[in-house]
Length: 131
Image (cartoon, rainbow, N blue to C red; front, side, top):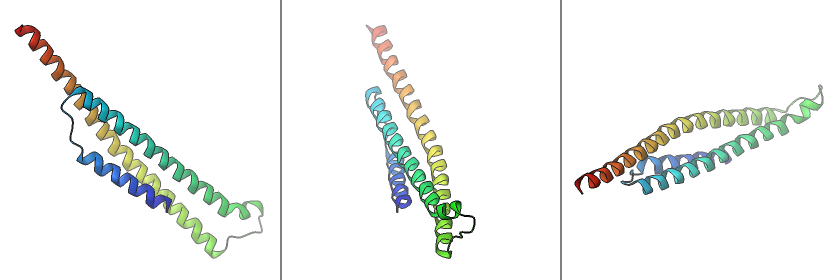
């Protein structure tokens, strides 16, 4: 359930980023960059928490076997191990894709901010030159 919820949050964030129009001034661009960065950080924390919980669950399932060499996991426990391992692999893959997407989006926002600064400076120089 945690993996599903995390994936839904990432999907919603990705959709929001993809649909966001870039602002036309420096201040709004800076605010958008800060807002998106904060959201990204929060989602990365959620991903890390989900991975940590999955690893802890895996450890708990395997604990009886790690304590005793004669102990064996039941078929249900083996299935649970396989499921948690699969979900952890999905989380890892999701995190890599999210990092790539964020990197491109962040670069786009940074470039937009540079453009807005250039435009603002150009307007100021033009006004000084005309005056």
